[in-house]
Image (cartoon, rainbow, N blue to C red; front, side, top):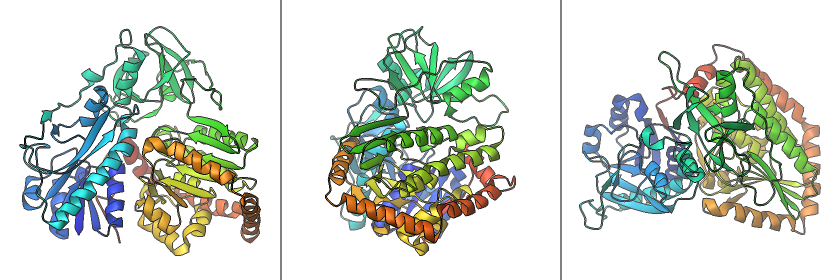
Length: 563
C-alpha cells in the first residue's frame, strides 16, 4: 500500500514506523504537520495515499483530510483513554501496565473506533525512555496489525461506544501537578515527578533564585542536606536534597524571558554556573566500578564478569559532549587494562549514542570552536576502539544510534542490536559531511555504493534492514528490560568460543593490512578537513539547522520518502 505518515515531528516513533512499514513492502511518505495544514493537504492531494497513519501529533488533522480518507491515530494509552497527556498520567498514577491504541480519526479527540491495541509494562524509567522503548514496541505491533486489517478489508473496527470499552478523559497534565514540594515530597515522589517530564516539558522549579525546568532524575543514597538545597555536582549533573534523601538532576532548561531566543536543555551544572558566576559546587565523583548495592547516578560504569568487560554509558538524549567523550575514552582505556577477552560497549537501555552534543555546542561562546573540539574528542574515542586488537569489542545497542554515534558502533568488531532499534548512519540532515572514520568503517561493512546511498538518502534504517545490509551482526529479539541479561549471556559465549584466539589474530592482521593500505590518520585528516570548512563557515547550513534542532523551531524539510 501507499501509506502517508503525518507527524508533528519526525521523532523516534515516526522514524521507526517509517522504517518498519517500508520493510513490510509499503511505499511510505512523510509530511510534517508542524509546517501547517496546507502542506498536509498538498501531500494528501499529490500522493493520494491508500492509508494515512499519524504516529505523533500535537495538533488535530484537518477535517477535510480525515473525512475523505481513513486516518489512523496512534494514541499512547489503552482503549478508551482520551486526552493529550496519557503517559504523564500513567507515570503519575504508578500504572504497572498501560497500552497503545490505534484508532480512526473523528471529530472527537481520541474518540474514533479502535483498529488495534497493544499493552505494555511500565518500568520505573523516564517518560522519554518509556516512549522510545516499551511504547514504541507496542505501537509498532499495533500499527502493523491495524495496517494488515485495513488491507484485508474485512475487519470492522471496535466503536468506543461498545460496552467493553471504558472511556476515561484525562486533562492536559499541567505544571501545577508536576510541582515538587521539597519540604514534603519524599524521594520516590520527587523521582516520579521528574521522570514524568524528563524530556518534555520538564518540571518548573526555582533554583538558586531563578526559575528553571528540571529534566531527569536519579536517586542518591548517601548525600544529605536541607530539602531543596543543591549539594554537589557530578559529570555535569547536580545533586539536590529531598526530605528523606537526594536526587541527581542531569539537565536544566532556563525559563524563557520575553524577547529571548528559545532556551534549551543542557548539563545542569553548566546552567547554574552561567546563572551564578562564582558558584562553587563540590565535585563528588563515583567509582567507575560501582560497588553492589550503591544507589547513585553516574553516566559511565564498568563491570567485569569473567573474561567479559562491560563499559556502560548513558547520556541524556544520546548526545556526547567534549567532556563526556573524554571521560568515556578514559574509561575505555581503563577497561583495556583489565584482563578480558571481550569488551562490550553500550548502556542497558535507551540511546546508544547520537554523536556530538549539539545543545552544548549551541550554548558555547564560540559554537564553531566547540563543534571542532567536540568532534575531535569523538574521533579520539572512535580511533581508540578501531585500534584495539587484543580483544573483541562488541557494540551492544539497546536503543537508537545516529550520526557519529552510529559510527562509534561500527568501529566495534561486532554490532549487536535490539530488534526495536533504529539507526541513522548519516549526517546530511544537519548539513554535515561527517567524521568518526565513517569513510573507513561504513564502506568496509556495506560496500561503497550502499555507503553512498545511506549517507545521501539520509533515511532511518530498521534493525532488521541494518542486519540485511551488514551494519549489524546480530539481532537480539528481547524486550527492553531483558536486553542486558541476553547481551551478558551472548558475550559470555563469545568469550568462551574455542576459536577466539584465531579470531583475534585475524583481527590484528586485518587491522595491520588496512593500516598499510591506507592509515587511519589519513581517513581522519580528510574527514576533518571537510568538517573544519563547514564548522568555521558562518554561512554553512549547519549553523541554522543546528539552532533550529536545538531550540525546537521550525526548520528542515517538510517531506521525505524512500527512493
